[in-house]
Each structure stands twice: as C-alpha cells, then as structure tokens.
Length: 129
Image 1 (cartoon, rainbow, N blue to C red):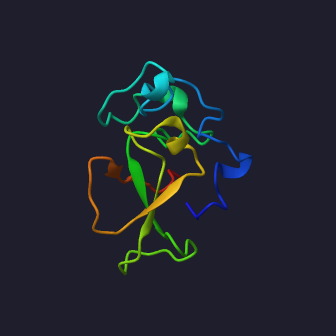
Image 2 (image 1 turned 90 degrees about the vertical axis):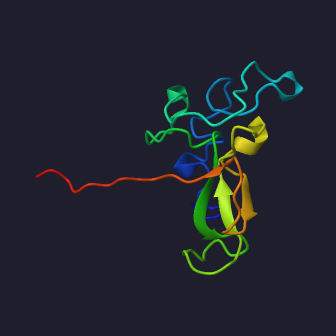
Image 3 (image 1 turned 120 degrees about the vertical axis):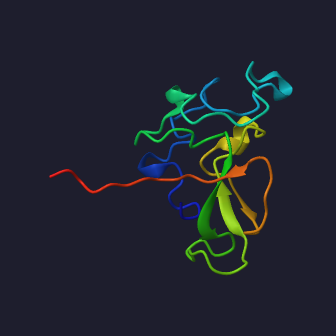
C-alpha cells in the first residue's frame, strides 16, 4: 500500500468491508465496552469471512500489523534495502477499532519484532490456458 493515497481502495472505505461492524475482525472490541469480542491472540486467516474486502482479501484489518515495503517518511520509496522505518498497516488483535481503519499506518524499523507484527504471503500462478 502506498501511504494514504490508496487508503480504502477506490471506494475510500473506512474498513476493508465498509463501515465498522462488531465481529468482522480480530481486534480488541472489549475496550471501553465497545463489543463482546477479544481473542487476545492471533487467529487463523479466514476466521472472519464477513470482513473480506471487495477484492476477496481476508483479514486486512486486525489479526497482525502487516509489513509494507514503503518507507514511513517517504512512502513513494519502496524496497527491501536500507534501515529506514517501514510502514505497517491493518491493526492487530491488540488494536481498538480506530487502530484497524484503512487510514492508520505506523512505522517500525526493519529489525523490529513483536507479537502483533506479521506479513502477507501472496501466491500467484500462471493463468490456465
């Protein structure tokens, strides 16, 4: 994802599925009694199918903050080289609903590790002819 220019896709959604709904992502809903759900850990991808994006991607909000290649201070710069802070997006299982919005991003050093950082593996195959 590139900075805030592509936030929420072409429809500028607040969350990958649209407006916030309880039970649509692995986040902390119990904080300040906002809702009943808080797993207190990561979950298997696909546990929240109702939170899928318009493109069919699952768990784009909550579960783990996902690493992006974009540099935090210069989001147009992408790559694996260097020590500049990188963007993480999507919120995590520890996030409140505002932290899982599409517009939220944080910066972490490439060597940082903790219990709520992760990445997305996208497998592509050649089209069947």
